Length: 174
Image (cartoon, rainbow, N blue to C red; front, side, top):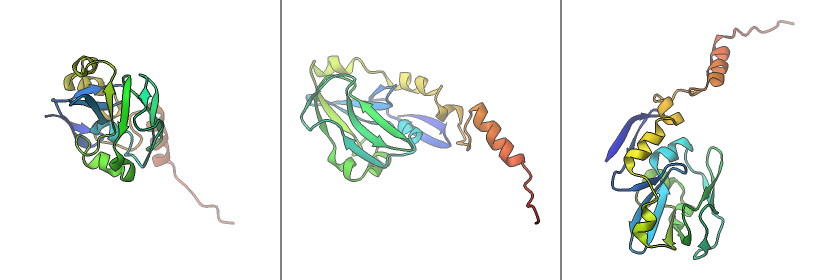
């Protein structure tokens, strides 16, 4: 198990036995004839959790790589695209209780599985290692703001927060 000790003020786990799709923040595990996908703990933290999920395609539907398959309401609105072509099925447990993703991101909190159009191991080869995923996170808001400070690390945000803190408010007495 690999860890990032300070990621937006939290210690996050990144299992080394999984593969990762860094851009989407997904982990992937080969199981039987399909690949299982879920949100990594760092991705879940960057999203500020998941409040609701909607499937954008039907259970058992053939999907194309890059096709939007899941709509999530997080701190923002997020569309997750299929990382590969194949037949998709979803985890009904996370639709009923999206907090399961944060409680057990690498277990019961998985999002969907795809039976790939190409052989499982060949399909798995297109994803990165835990090390490459950790390296990709080094430029993320999570690593740039290890203490999880409000206002983050953006120059504009820092200027606004600093400006607000330094203002002296006076009430007019009329």
